[in-house]
Image 1 (cartoon, rainbow, N blue to C red):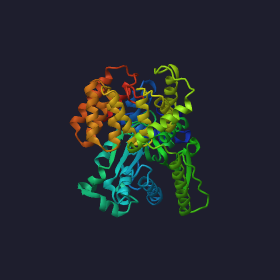
Image 2 (spheres, rainbow, N blue to C red):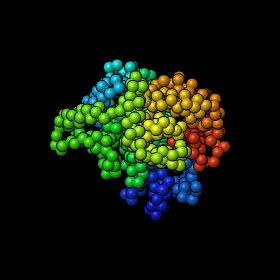
Image 3 (cartoon, helix red, strand yellow):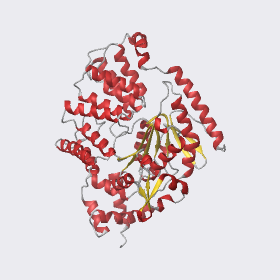
Length: 516
């Protein structure tokens, strides 16, 4: 392959940065040229220079851009890569999280949510699943979500198959392969079904798609793994992604990154926790790990801070258990009325009077990830008997994004009872039921939403994903086609109802990547 001139590569680098957020420095231009060689073939060219000239002179579709981006990032991985990260997870972080779940303020909360963002061909999320299987004795009694996403649909399809060669097991103990895989023809190994079903693979573009979102299941995460992903992005794009991760984590949740990723310099929303060979980022709670201390001393400090946090939260927590709701409702309402009795509550219309101001403030707090504060604002309406329908979706999402699913479901039931013919309330109920592992009930709620509004795009999309996970490809494609056809009939820039900001055009592109 002839060498491409530095001027053309520089122009290409600038184009890629503007189109994808990926960054290539001057010293990385030879690597950029090499990777463009692999993209050339997929785009149907036999000459890389001609391909680059076409790129620089053509308006690319989203699909074109994401296909290009998939060639510009490294998909190289293997099982239990960065073993010290998994050691810290197994010996320190996971035991703490499990302890908190089992001693939660509302009783045992045996649910755990983990996101592998930029999962490549699946070795990382499957490694997490194996570790959980080894670590949690009663794992069958837990509701565990392991979401694995990537921009590269070819990687997603390979990961979903769960079949690997010897190269994926380099530096991996032999017993992992012997205990969790079965032999296949041609020297391949297939992951066992009980591990495979623990992981849900999905397409997601970190640079462009919206998260946290009930739609793509990226909310209320206890742990996020995103390693060797941010290093490719510009500072602006990295900052956006890190902020999205922070909003997707529950308070006290952890981000596992790599030393090459710029989390430390780009976000003040995390506390850095140092272990030997491992750097973690914890949302919210301040944890100080002194330099020079060993992992044991650091983990003891971490445990103490957890206990202090739990004690503080127990003092200030407002309980929403259904068993106590009736007894505390009157007292809470009276207290809140007394606090704001001098405030003017005007007509309950968005954008007008006090109600509109409260809704606007709550929405702003929600968008910035301040979910508890948003709920407090919405409770001001409730304390004045203003159960405004516009508040229901926001308060449901705010509770769900904190992992408070029982509270979210209480509000779903209240919303449906108030307005049973509102399809959005049935859809939101379905998303919460899905997070609780109640899939069949969620399917019924989604079908109720479609009965009430056959042109409601998002339920079709969600049903397609459910069928895809179940392996029912025919039904999945039927639902995806409905979502795509309805979206195609709209303006591409029109935001779909209850989609957390997804446009009709983006829906068409995502469905196009999922249809099999």
